[in-house]
Length: 109
Image (tube, rainbow, N blue to C red):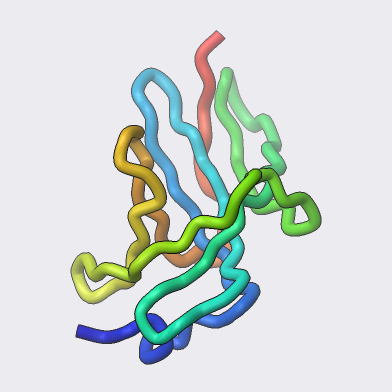
C-alpha cells in the first residue's frame, strides 16, 4: 500500500468530488499539506459555465477558499488510483485527483 508521499501528492494539487441524486454536484479541494500517511485539504470555489438545460461544466476557482476548517484525511486506493473520503454522509463523498478537465454538473430547479 502506498503512502501519501509515495503517490507524489503535493501541496497545491487539486482534487474533486462529484455526485448527487436528481443533480450532480461538483466540489473542488486543494492540498495544503501532506504527511507520510495523510493529506490536509481545503475546500475551494467552483466556477460553473452553463452549457445546456440545467447543466454545465465545473472547474476549480483556486483563488477562493470556501471551507471553514481544513480536512485531514488518509489516502485510500481504488483500482490503483488514490482517493480521499471527504465525508461519510453524501453522494460524492470521495475525492479524486483532478485531471485538468471541466467536470459535468447539473442542478434541479
